[in-house]
Image 1: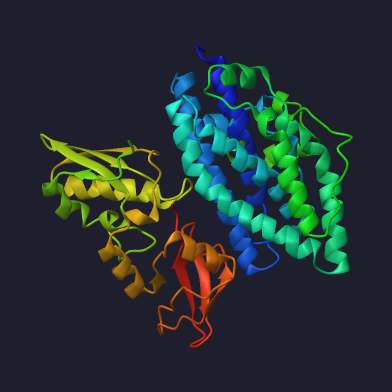
Image 2: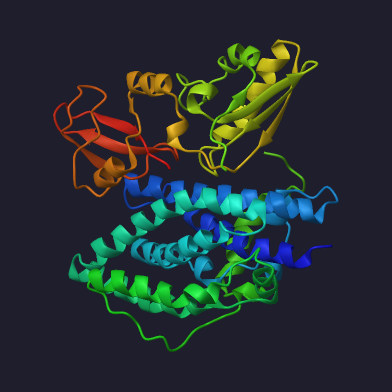
Amino acid sequence: MKNENLYRYILGIADSSLILGQRLGELCGHGPSLETDIALTNISLDLIGQTRSYYQYAAKLIGDGKSEDDIAFLRIEREYLNVLLVEQPNTHFGYVMARQFLFDVYHLMLLSELKNSSDETLAAIAAKGIKEVSYHKRFSGDWIKRLGDGTQESHDKMQDAINDLWRYTDELFTMTEADAEMSRNNSGVDVTRFKEAYYEEVSRLLREATLEVPERKYFQYGGKKGVHTEHMGYLLADLQYMQRAYPNMKW
Amino acid sequence: MIETEAKIQSHLIPILETVSDPEIPVLSVLDLGVIREASEENGHVTIKLTPTYSGCPAMDVIGDDLRAAFQKEDMTAQIELILAPAWSTDWISEEGKRKMEAYGIAAPLGETADKAALLGNQKIVKCTNCGSTNTHLVSQFGSTACKALFKCDDCQEPFDYFKCLK
């Protein structure tokens, strides 16, 4: 492929949206209330919609008649470049909201920078996504406050969820080779630039939700290089089932 | 400069008007403002369509419906999906907003009003059933990506509000 770095860069962003979209989609019909159920699947739909735009672009780069579906369904685990945070399981609703919030704050910052990309397609996808992701962040942020500053039980569960997921936050700000190369030619984003702003914004909201901000001590990495946590295989088994069982089936 | 005016050849308008949003059948694709360009040459129509939300499943259906509508007129239509500039609720026509209200969906308000309503600070969205402003937000997300759910505290009717997107 001519533009390997661009291809890997697109996947790095798109895979996180796909995998989080899939996780939220798993909750369809299982939300704690009708309104939250609808909200989770709406967010999932936005993320998968964004993923489609990215993958359509990536498919054009591969050429050879490949489509967005090939990219979504026919790769092996090691070829997915999403961050570890988004593949973590739907342990409980508070956990889902904590995962969502930690990602939304990052996601919005990323897209806000990406919309200035010299790559017109990436800039357009980002500009479109910003409107959707701001809405996601408002939703997840509200729930962090409601649950954090809620009952003793909801507070404890939310604190545990934040403590647990915290170890995946630093990976958001690591740069792969493709990231660095794309950032050098102004079509990609240097994520390290907004790392401090991220922790500041997240910490502010956690404190507002009467939660403690965990120490930034131990972190886990790997997703961006295709090395995933043990949850990823099961997620992909679900995601890819139809295409693996009935190759080339059309919906 | 960002082009926000749609470029549509006038003789194509009557055909485009027959194609409606599958989720809100009272709105034509023109009312919705998703057609950014439409031009015809020798029976071949090129249409630039922009999605309301990235994941809106109605877009595939709208594309199929457009092709079918032009086929009826012995024309072929080629649909191109464009993302920039991103769709905004400002592009919904005044006529469209009226039709939407009559259909029972509160039309999008300006950005500031919307934010206040979503944060629960003010009761601004008018009930489509009785016209009362004594309403509250039930859910930020509604039955489709473009809507939020409200309830009227006077007549007790729940109703959809078309989210403001700018």
